[in-house]
Image 1: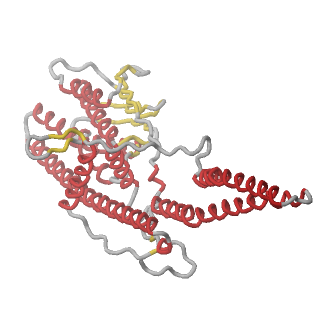
Image 2: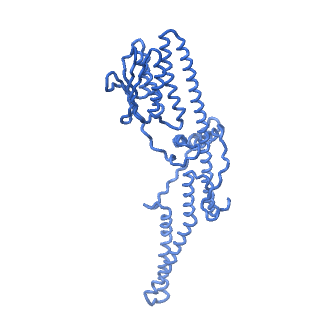
Image 3: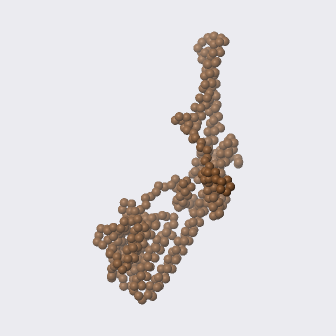
Length: 419
């Protein structure tokens, strides 16, 4: 090991090149983990068809101290005292007996001197043993505890330099702890690289999906402009509104990759603008009055609510001839987001697609479709997921390229390994 610096206990060492783990390296690490688990819990086969059954590790009884005492330092002191005390008493008794047989002691002070000398020697022995335990065992255990806590806080650059002066057993233990920290650092780097790769791929997927939806919408819009049949044009416009709603959710997912929630105001204001631009053309006069309460909605829930609002708008457009005043309300109540709209006419028996889609979106949202206060108004009450407590590793320092998403993935990985 390298020589320790002056006055340093734990000195940082510059990190080396960790490297970029490939998929094959991650696969080999996963196979090694599975093989290690298989050795401890699965059946071992000696050749083809000869299983020996599950291999059980020997059970070691956990150390529980002496009575209510759980501290190693106090336990060692008690055990040393209990081991030396009988010898102290025996030596003191024999000294007094020998003195009384050989000569007559003149005073009580002489008796006390003869009897106390073995006791003093015994106390000195206990003190020497305690200091030896402290210097040879407990001091290095405390140092290893500090080192482990530093590794737990992510300070992988620390190295156990002081252990070069420790006994051989503690040097081996310190080397094992250092190797464990290096392995954790490598896995941490592998997770970070995998997360970066996943982020790039996800961004590319979002980009391609958005482009494909734009191409499909442009083709349908071009076809609707050249169609002379009103029914066909109406069907193409319905498809365009639905595609626009899907593209809206995709756009917010691409713009806010690191977030899991979306602003209700931004989402539904964008929905109103694109719906008016798509449907408020030609002979139709469309006015959407939106009352949106500010709040945060999970991205998936927000995307499905936009689809539900688009389908409710199409249903109202099919039922009302002439100008349409559509009222849309979004509010938050007791752990739920409520989407209300009017008018909410009865579905046309000849065109049940909108009604089926509305009930399908309500089931996906696990919402409750019910009448709302006001004439001809419906509302869907969607429960919002309760926020989970932060994971323990969320408090770790965040370095460049390492955001909250990294800690969420790391937390899921740790739960999977633990299970």
